Image (tube, rainbow, N blue to C red; front, side, top):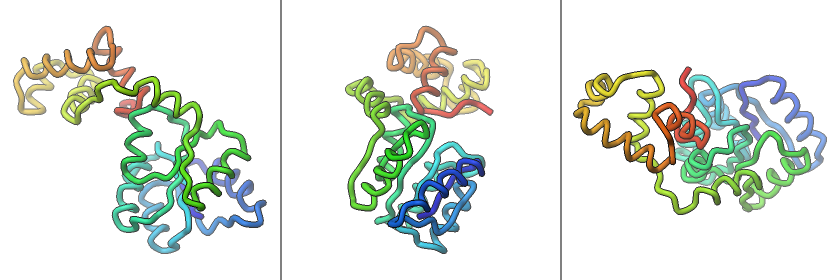
Amino acid sequence: MLITDDHPVMRDGLRMVIEEEPDLEVVGEASDGQEAIQQFRRLLPDLLLIDLQMPEVDGLQAITTIRGEFPDATIVVLTTYPGDARVVRAFTLGATSYILKTARRDEILKAIRGALAGRHTVAPEVAQEIASHTGKERLTEREIGVLHLVAKGRSNRDIADALFITEDTVKARMKSIMGKLGADDRTHAVMIAIRRGFMDAPK
């Protein structure tokens, strides 16, 4: 399998755990999404174990590209981010399983073997997060675009100018966003959106 994580210590730890198993083998490592894409093309591993939050090309972008080129690729997400929107996005793009870095060693190995056998695994905490938001209306891409600018401290006028829309449209989208997220104000809406995985924290 191919391990992708931007933290060398995490990659080393995973390699040690996996290579102790007689039926599993690590054929390569990558430190970001772009390297994962290149290594996948070169190595054609049976499974890609990948984090989501990485510099430059993130895990979701890598999954999109890899599944576009290799529709049968088996991909297990191993990350610290349980947000329901991020999880749904990962599965929509083609992830096979979604587990958290807080999982025990045996849980990670079970998820890997399950994915290789064609089974899907979702961490209990992740499943609970998804269930708690089931039935709730999701943010649209246009609403997320507004939130990204709100997170940067932009005013309604600035947001309107940047997106080529009117201030009234910005206000309407913010009203919709706050209603969907149950937010008290703009800052609260950004915090909830980040926690649920609709967007990453501003850098």
